Image 1 (cartoon, rainbow, N blue to C red):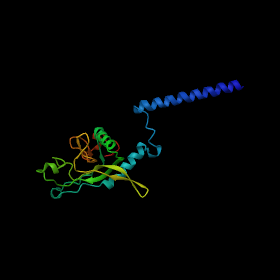
Image 2 (cartoon, rainbow, N blue to C red):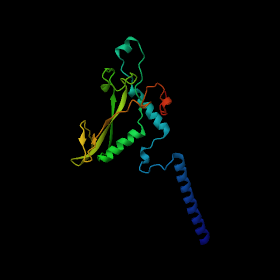
Image 3 (tube, rainbow, N blue to C red):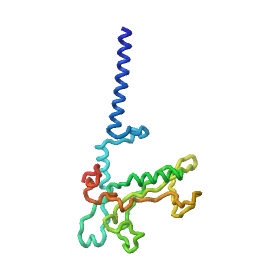
Image 4 (cartoon, helix red, strand yellow):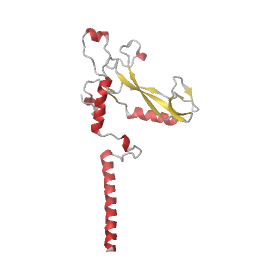
Length: 204
């Protein structure tokens, strides 16, 4: 009897080990890599909930302020930005800079472009075309950990001045970054149908 129980117990352990291996292999196959164990389950959101939250934001996003020209032409209001895309390269460059400068993270500011720009002053114009004027977007700012009366703060740091490092190369410490116009599909809307640029959580 003891031998049978021992064999049964050993078999159960073996089955459990195989099941774990199969699950691990399935996780690896479905995602290309194992899910990062540092991401707690408490922050994971299923697709249905994610779409629900995205939909909740729609009335808060509102509409782009109309210009006098829009009002005169009786153009319909344009729904404001609902999502912003950044390239992997841009994000990696920011992470590399944070590592070099002992930064601890990135703060995302919600911002809105002006409704009108002087197109003769290219340096002050975020886009040569008007389709993004007046829309919301995100601004990313580098942060450093700062201790204040026992509290840990994530303090914005940046400068517009060039400084010389010991390697004689010039770098701009910290950053204030928005998305770059040469990458397509950065903001959505526009276009009106965000699914066309891959924003699958938006129901247009």
